[in-house]
Image (cartoon, rainbow, N blue to C red; front, side, top):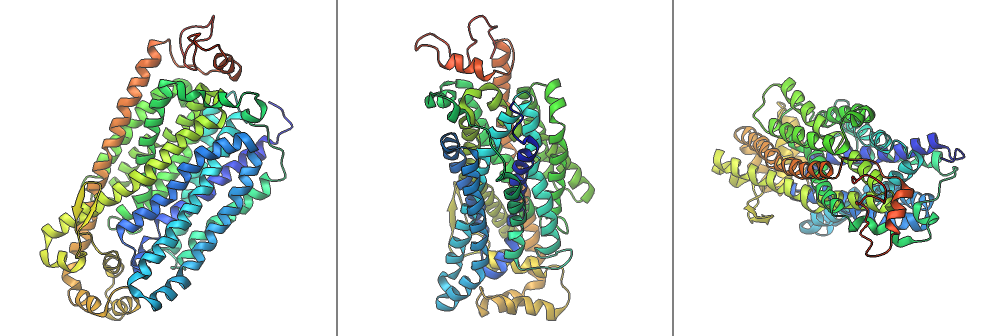
Length: 530
């Protein structure tokens, strides 16, 4: 490694990009109560906004990988820096624009502000994709002898950001903030502090050349796609994204009626991930990466099933969350480490492809499906508990999505029920209703009249829906375990898992067509294991 590169500074700057992303992610997951009250954003719309926070990530992490190989690390990092600041600006515009839209046409105001929030999340996700396209191959290149370990350390930045963002959200966002509720746009823009910090650290420094910049054959970067094990890795990483980030996206909302400040569950699981990822190196040395991924999938499946049970004890909720965190902690960065170790000739392309599949899956499949499942189960439980409450709180039109058909609970009505649940002062309750600009006066009068009989029923249905959604999601790590078991058997059949050097991989990739060598076949004179 050329020691002219400031590895420590570049590592810290890369770490801070993930901190910024984690802070933005955590505060966005805590925005639901404010958006329900102020804009009437429904659960389905909230799920779509969360999904937008991954869609751009998934697209850009792959195409960004190609751009990184063409234009270099620093150029793409600079573009992400500017776009991230623009994303914060869109958040600050939402309230004033909604006020104007609501005055002009109240029937379309919610849909318009939903679109604004959707595209703000999408812009944020573009930045995240550019970051990942840059920092994963950069750190693998800076630390070639211990990639999996340093990639796990790098990705401790994500839970670190969620810890910081989650604590900030617990103090200043939601229905029961520990300190005081501040404007949600201010809270959600807190990530800008870390954006500026990484910019100050990174931009004065010299970056190494990418594999694409230093190679005469740009096409060799895409050789990973000729490998059958890599295709299976892509499928498995999509499932990892569905489970890990899908559950994290909904953790605060799914637990909001279970504990006093639900964002603390996200903070706690993130803290465990942060610590565990720093110790990934010794664990990987004792258990090869594929074995670690297989074991983690089984533990994560058990953790989700446990969290979905009817747990009344706060202590046991955190014990179950601990078990789940042990399962999910190593999955994402270890997969990137496997891509770097097995396909070094593919530079950022292999890592970008994994990240793209993971993010697109959660953005367009995982997040929306979990939201739909939660809404469906909540609606079913609410109708079972009280037909009258069901009629008052659900939309008149049926929602159809992902094979489910149900009358969804109105987001604004649910937001009010959650807000007033712990209130006893009639004046305070009346003020919550008076401040709501989304519901009609008739709806507000009806809800307030039946508030005493409805609130507990609505909250119980919300909790039941959340638990059942987690139980449904447990099928995903179960499928992952099967896939990783296939890879364990595959590597055992060819002699075991080992790291491939860049020189060795390039020699294989440049073998004449029809020679029989590939990225997963042994080079001449080596043992038959890949």
